[in-house]
Image (cartoon, rainbow, N blue to C red):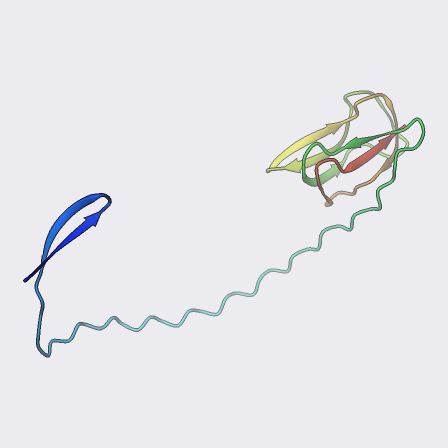
Amino acid sequence: MKKFNVTVNGTAYEVEVEEVKGAVSAPRAAAAPAPAAPAPAAPVAPAAPKKAAQSAGAGEHSVDAPMPGKIVKLVATVGQSVNAGDVLLILEAMKMQNEITADTAGTVKAFNVDAGNSVAAGDSLVILG
């Protein structure tokens, strides 16, 4: 018998181990089955191409993304008159759908995004005039 000190999770143990000599063979583990071929991955739909961002001109201003996310739906339409607080589009971030609203009254001049686009915080979403 051989004695060993073993520490497990901060607790010290004294163990005795018997050394086995001779032609005793250790049992062999059964051969592991060959892994199955991975299933083909489902094709990933390409993200919608991003529009070229239009800048706000004189008398216009941009409504920007408050956080990174994905555009789910455009609610307003180009040419529509909106009041402060009216919903312009839906932005999904962290599995939550956020209504992006007009900060002032005006007319929707242009959308710089389409449904399906990913946006970063600060990206221009809508031009109001």
